[in-house]
Length: 429
Length: 179
Image (tube, rainbow over all chains, first blue to last red; front, side, top):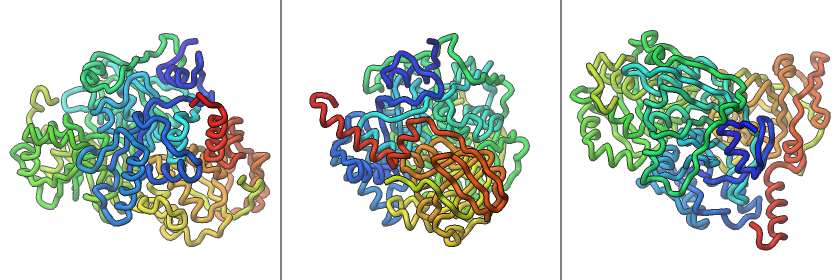
């Protein structure tokens, strides 16, 4: 029977010849992830309530200290300690301490821990990020994670697949972030609810792996179960010397069934933002240009990998953050920070008057290091701008790509990066 | 432990796309292991609903429009609602992780576009979980609920994923040589 990539991975996990949308399957998990907010409850449920003593396979689990770490207060220090102790007790192989890991969704791909053809779950909604590497990856809760820890398997409803085809290429300045914000604006925050988003087409061939991770990262913002891309030369090269296990890529059959096919001309996609208070509140940049800002945040699992920081630095180089505005830059992993240091990017950020922080989720979820107050306006490279996401429910958050964020920090209002930098240098664009 | 089969309560009505950061703002995630404390702050992030949890009478029912619980995977979202004293959630539709989390917790959750449309805040509802029927005594109306697939029903009847895993672990222990 013809199947999509998502269906094939779930069928293999369930040990079945084939599956169809709507089937409920019990499937084996290849890799699982949790962090400082989700490991403490998962660990307690697994040991105290389920009565399991050990993890099904400690080599196939990663744990990061990223959400409220380095501890923002005494209560988060307790969550950090419980996370640390559980990881140690269970012998979890891929435990990333403060100062050595960073945000889970950057750390797992950069360490080659989530691979093509695999079934991956993470106790964090943005676990769908990994699908850019041609796997089925989805966010789960803490009870789910406890089940996976105890048994190595979990129940899934096989999703219907929506296919997104991107023709042609993105124009100058336009990034993967603009593309996915545009798509979410078209289909809405529940436009792919509980479904698989399969992204294909010419435009993706010219988009590097880090930017592809931005696209799948935001599948959840359309309500999707997972986002998935095809395996190609870009995937193969990214995984070379990185993949921790052998892997088998998966392809959709030509006659697979899609619930719906959406076609987009990538060349027509403009620079854009999501306006407050929802990720689907899309507007072309021109509509919001000139909006006054209190804070600019470059960070998160969506847009703070090294390529994102390179573009931000190219824009900021030789400029100063506008008076009355603060720019906070949070790399998404320790490895990203090391690389940024090597390339001299941190010097550029500091000279511009930006606050450079350790790798953490930080301000993205209103945790620490950049929480917004009542009525404040922020331009952020993150993924969500529902009321209260970054702090006060009456704070206004706009979402954009990192070059737009950097340029807007310089001008103090939402701005086109071309106003600050003539052209993105070759090799960075 | 299984949930009671007929639940009666007063209704609180919420709109569409209420995300998990509105249900329980992330700053309260430091209370991840304390249901009562989480309950005190439930729905606090919904504009205009500050102090909502203090007004809930244990047993009240929460009714919402589409895509309820979108956003984060934090299980503290349904936990906070339960902690506030809400006996049951009915929505036009749910975001998938919120839905999973509720089912896994054995927390009663129903999908009924008709109820989401017909119910107004304060209505007196009676919900027959077994039959999947919502009766609105205030309006003299009745709404059907979408049936769950049998595996989900099994989970709900068992009281959630915890007893299901316990049973499965036990079965494995009785089969030596197989893990």
